[in-house]
Length: 422
Image (cartoon, rainbow, N blue to C red; front, side, top):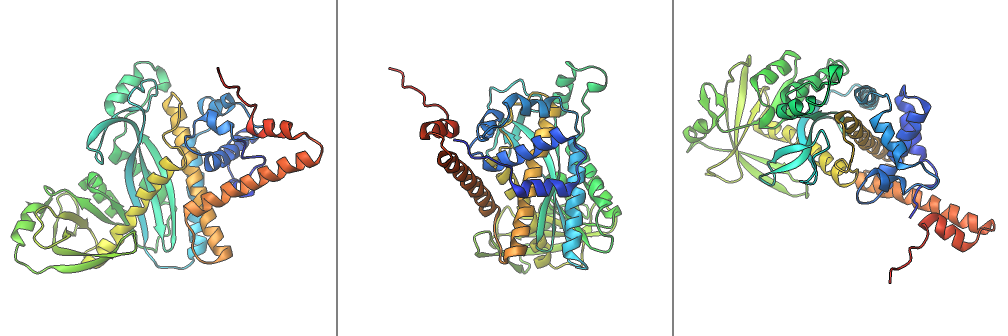
């Protein structure tokens, strides 16, 4: 059934505020995709997307927008980030609340038979504890006071994948391998020049990104790190697990943290101040357990030794929002539903999906400012889908009232009826 008869005013407004340098046809395609990704149910293949729009374009037009249209996804992301940070600075004003930058990576699952899509390869999924076919990307998000936005994302290709793809490429078309840690540093570099200088910044990530080189670079920017670390990571020359054994019998600091379901949980925490090899200054090691005497606790590292255990773990909780972003882009915006072959086209798809996610957050905060109270991304999605459904029904009724036959209108909006095969 057709669900879009005209472009959403909010989409046009948001993309107009970005001040993009795209040509008019490119901008129209971007507006169209933003609307379609929000409204289309279930899978978001290009064929299913164009089927949602009345008097729309052919799926090949949208495919060409990703495959051959000359626009740069990184330039698009850079403009979005500039706008979002300007938005934050405008609404936060002189706030001295700390800024939290969260780093993480995620897999977008593909069928195990997929073999022609250049960004898709075998990756180990730590959640299901097995190797799957997927594309992988690193992303960074920002939280400042009550506001939160996704910022940059980059596709990650394994070194073996880059070598394999380069066998079919020549000259300037060859891909260059960039590690996840290097991608993370590049994303932080692009954000650093846009942030206010007088506001404390904390960079949050899990144990995979807790390399001394990255932590040292972050400290050189005047920022702090709060990160998970593995049990074999050495602090003051000894593994974190050894400090856990040595602290047996020592009293715990009790930390109460709010959970996503509204409840609270108490964690039993011990702390140690020491040095991390390759990182200037002292760091604070936290050993956190859900119950006293737990054999396998969680370990955390913080470079701001003035913070209490409660403050450190509360700040680290801000990282959870990036996990909910991954759920949103996969479940509601079709991050893994692309059927584009080249890495360049897939990178453009990713940038469009994350643009739509940023747009939904912008709609959420604009709605809260104008109506008061709080709302959620799911409520914004439902409201925009209902808006398009109402517009579609109104136009269909207007066509019937203007003299069109009911059967003609039904065929136009629902498509011709398929005859049953005997």
